[in-house]
Length: 170
Image (tube, rainbow, N blue to C red; front, side, top):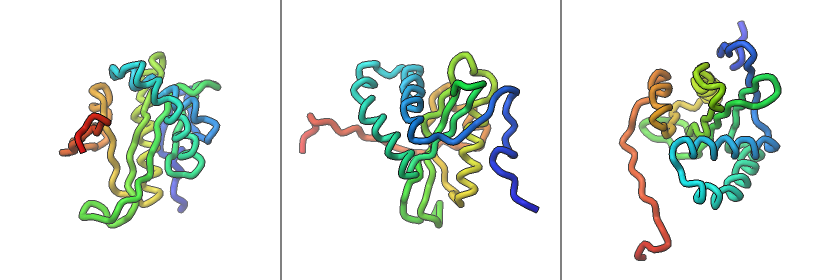
């Protein structure tokens, strides 16, 4: 008996299908990423400042395999996307393996929301994690996304954050 492929394990709504992103899709992923941040209240000026560097990062990371993108199409246009950043970290009590996954850039175009596309995208990403033997998967959730991730089994953690600026004393 063969192991079902990822596409066999996720049932998409009629008319929707998914594919892996290529480096040529970096601009589309960046567009979705910026739309996601705008939905969450990010400042347009700050997004514009990060645009070029973020686009370069996505192209490079898609090309070298440190980021895997998943795109949902409805007809020809891509209407949703998500990605996984493959993190090389030391084994720990949580994971004996050196690779962990960080899910990011989960976005669904407004006119396609309410069809569980984000859940399906994350499910595809989790299947790829399992295929690679990754056991620790993390993400940051917006208020809108939190219920979806909770239904998939994600639990809140105790992460802390510090943003360093040029004005910080040495």
